[in-house]
Image (spheres, rainbow, N blue to C red):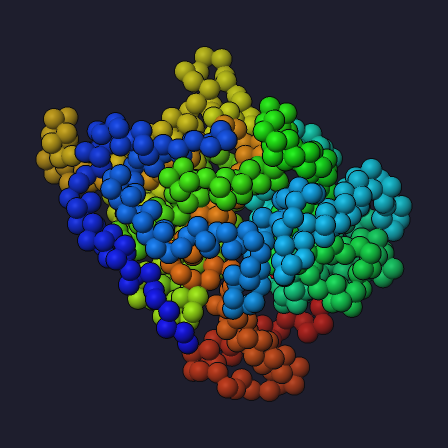
Length: 596
Ligand SMILES: O=P(O)(O)OC[C@H]1O[C@](O)(CO)[C@@H](O)[C@@H]1O
């Protein structure tokens, strides 16, 4: 175990620790009255406005945070990522999801080899294949066009594509491209998820995309075998070649599964699962649903952006992500949105002691943003939930962290969340909030006779909530309003609750790409400062291996009547109850229920 310096041992960290008391003395009400401060805490880039004036922070705090970034070598770490160094040291891998959205003529090396031509080779293959499927020149085993797609995958091979698909669904242009087509996602190994996903689908018109980086993930492989059975029992085993394709880094296992390697779409070990939405993982299912032209036009647009002709820019998903990549790589830290977001998270978690963050998009189209980001951000605290990227208890050198890092993320679109957990964030625990608003709705509706349009109604809440959290309501104000004495404690809002607001111009594919990349890079910034490896996920392994022991036991007990052995008292008791309670379930049921 290396004994490298932890960030908490630096003067800059200690300086911030000492600064906490000053900040705690000042209520956000006072901070918000300083217009100059508020103005300095607004940053604009490429149509996005970030307002972080409602953070419990002063300009002095920001200055100290920038110094902390310097002490952590943040710029150097960002450069090492973009330069294709093996910064994922525990897996000995480069971290190059930015190469997935680079133009054809870009050079992004990993071990001295340019990754971009390989990226493009797969993109060209996706374009060709998705156009054949969409045009009906690639047909199913019975000659019918394939209009429905089921993408099977879990974790990073599911949540990112689901987020983008959900966000694009109501975009007028994207939905026009998707007319008459369906895209569904099968993730959970729960057979209920299989049943729900294939209900109403006809195998004759369904294309299945098996998405798995490793092609060994238990849930995905069982679901893939189940759906392969659904297809072959209806259309014969030879139909699999026409109805199943794959996205993976492991093309050997794809072939062994029975999928024609010509119908496999590669990606690379330098793409982390949860950062893979811009690879074939997302681009294939999304191109099948919305058309590859989205991606193709993006490439042209990127070229134009590089030469400053932004007026000719088309509005596409990957281009939006790429625009943020460039900004993240080159903007000074005080104008760099992902860097600012990351530093503010560090401040809230490690200094102010707020372990959670609420992600609150005021757009139903972004309902899958929080589930996607949770995966990338959750952290193992001494007694808290663990998830991927920043869910680490040790530094990148293996040194136990003596400070809190990572965040517990959760969220719901506004205004739904206002009617559930907002009570807690107003009067209970302090949870820093990300409010995300959109200037132009994907679906403008203005009813005659209404005071405001439906979107204005939604956005009234987006503007009101951050101020309610920041200012609160004092007992004096309540007295003034003649609130009965006994209700004053109940109606008092302490305020001083931090939030930040992101205002996007619209929710086009371009903006969705921007949002995705902002969060991806924010997470990297946090990991770089905390000195952890945000790109591995060893914490998911233990549960997997214990599940495999349980699987063996269930098999042995059911098939050979062997007793439950080798587990602790609690698990043994629960497993016995489970086995006894399900003993009357037929051992060889039909693979799929009749209603499927
Ligand atoms: O794409 P695969 O290899 O099936 O893995 C699925 C997911 O499982 C994990 O390995 C662990 O949850 C994720 O990192 C990954 O995105």
